[in-house]
Image 1: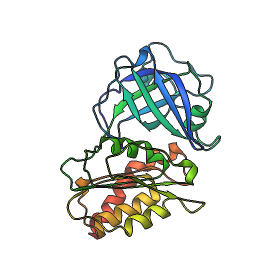
Image 2: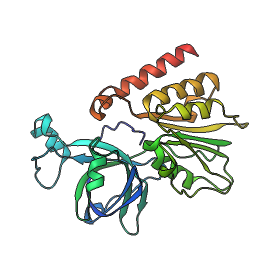
Image 3: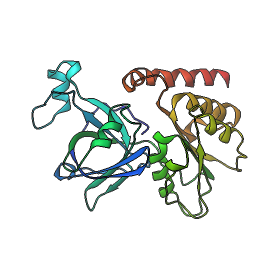
Image 4: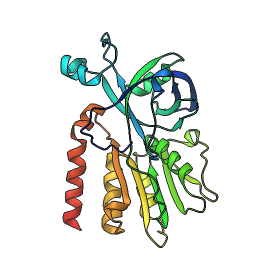
Length: 280
C-alpha cells in the first residue's frame, strides 16, 4: 500500500465481487473478477495496491467510467471517495484479484462495504501501483506492521527466496486474528497481541529490543503513523539503516479520518524525514 505519485491519468477497471470469506473476526477477504479486469495486470511489487472508488449515496456516473471526466465535470462533493488497498493476490489465469479488508463494525467506509459485499456487487478501481519488494541482495529482511499492513507483509513473505533470513512482526488484537501464511522454510511471523494496549506499542518494543543480524537489511515498516514515526527514527538514527533500504509509511493515523490523514500525509512524512535528517 506504499503509494507513488503519478502524472499520468490513472487506469480504471470495473471489479465485480466473485465471493467473500471471513478470514478472522476482523478481516474479510473479497475476491474480485469479471470482464472489467480482463486487461488488469501487476508489475510484481509485493505491496502492489489499487484504489477502490466509492461513489457518494445517490450519485451515478456516465459510462464508460472516466475518473478524469468526473473530476472535471462533477462538484468535488460528488467525486467518489477512494481507499487504497494492497492486492493480496492476483490470479492472472482466472482474472481474479484478492483484497483483504480490516473490518471493525461500522467504522470507516471500505471495511463495512466489504462486510456487506456479495457476489455480483461491483466497484471501479484505479491502479495498480507499488513500491516495495524484498531485495534479493539484502542479507536479511525486517517486516513490521499492524493489521493494515498484514496483506502486504503476507505477500512479501510469500515472495521471499528460499533461505532468506526474515524477522516478521505483526501486531493484532488477539490470537483470533492470527492467520496462516506461507513463508520460506524456518520463517515464522511473530504475532504480537495488542490486548487493549495502544496501537504499535508492542511493535516498537519488539523492534527496539531485536538483536539485529549482521549485514544489510531490507526493511518494510507500515501501519499507524505514530509507531511508524517512532520506528523510522529508531532505524535511521539508532540502527543506521540507510533510507534506500527502508519502505516505510503511515497507512493511517489514530484520531483522523482517512480523508483528513491523506490531506496531510505527504507533508507529514516529509517533515518527519527532515527532522530525522537534521538529527542525524
